[in-house]
Length: 195
Image 1: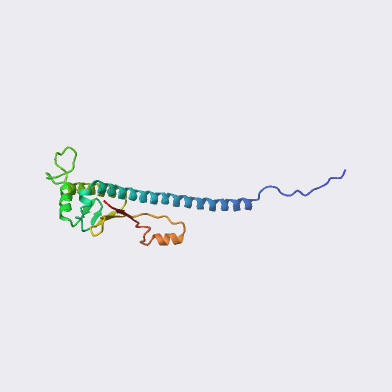
Image 2: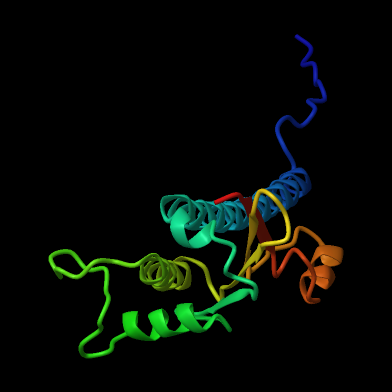
């Protein structure tokens, strides 16, 4: 009987093929991790923009509720809100803002059960003070400007809110752009209101 020898081909993966497969999988997983970081950053950005829109709508609702002050066309200079403080050159509103912020015995105030009538300017000051505090709590490094133009009919007011955002870029070009100050790192939300 004759023994026949057959050459068997090696079956299975070689070590080099396994190493190449691991490198390809590792690169893919790193790409997925970067996309996940970008998705989380985008979620944070959209959250801040939604909060800015909600805060703007909140002040617009307060303006609609207090038409006696906001629609009277007495506000000729813009109101600036920085941090939790609101400042304006309107003497009546400035006086009301000081009274709201902590005078010991205000003559006119808008607190429940206080017994004093609440004047429209004091209600506007109370709304601005509370809104500025809320804005400072929900948006990082926020500031706002409220401008009413009494020359147009109907009276229109502009609420402009600014804040800072942290960005995560996908590539080197995005990292370079994120290092500069542009509209994406310091966005602005503008709302037009007719009180």
